[in-house]
Figure 1 (cartoon, rainbow, N blue to C red):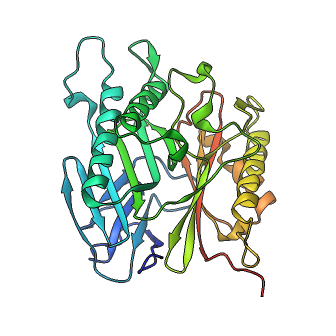
Figure 2 (figure 1 turned 120 degrees about the horizontal axis):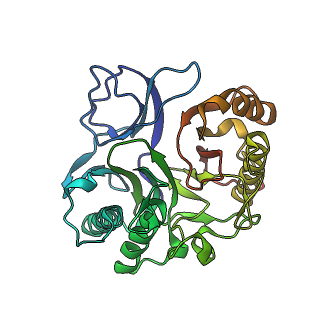
Length: 340
């Protein structure tokens, strides 16, 4: 069984209208352009776009026939028979918490509980990919870094819905300067195939030095898409085993990140007798901690991967203090071919 209507992603520059009944959802990167209009769920990724690109870019998930949707608590969603896109934003300030409790912890647990409740109600058992953006990711809240508070809340929602962490989705978690907790996600009726990196400890198995609860995501995954598949690569950085390498050296961190991406591509290409994933197949988001590092990161990436790669560079706080760059990617491919 495969998806009836393949899911596609199109990038549109600032000012484009994406109000179409065939749109599942939109990531609005950078500034919200004047006149922006969408009837589909929108995740606003409020991070500056770096370089000579436009100040805003819309990444539009769409199919080839009309889809339906609605509102479920804080979630706006649209779906086809086989795939669902949703987006929600929670303003922590509006949450009532007990004295000494973390609002981000509460917001994250609430968000993921809503996601899992929606998926159960709509009959989508498998969460494929999530995009998480949270303000002040490294500030301390209730005696613990906010990113670690986020991980606790997410883990508790997984536990509450009896979802094992080793079947978690591909994901990213980046820090914004301001704004709400913002989460977008894609789910399907069929399971994705999870991919781990042999160079790294699985994120959900990190030791306790990284917080009371490990991050709940898998390094990459492939999901069915018509007669083909989508490859989702999670936020990937200069980590080997579970430790950050090349402290303070953005060029070396970029190179190590590419080595980790290469390991994931090698795993994704196992069993693909033809049409393997290549660097130019991928659509990249490159998150850079310091804007002044943009030129050298781009030069390093293009030196390793070629100047034709399709990449958007954004300034963001990466999930660890000592990480200077993080890269996520996705690609579309035909189904795995077998030798003739």
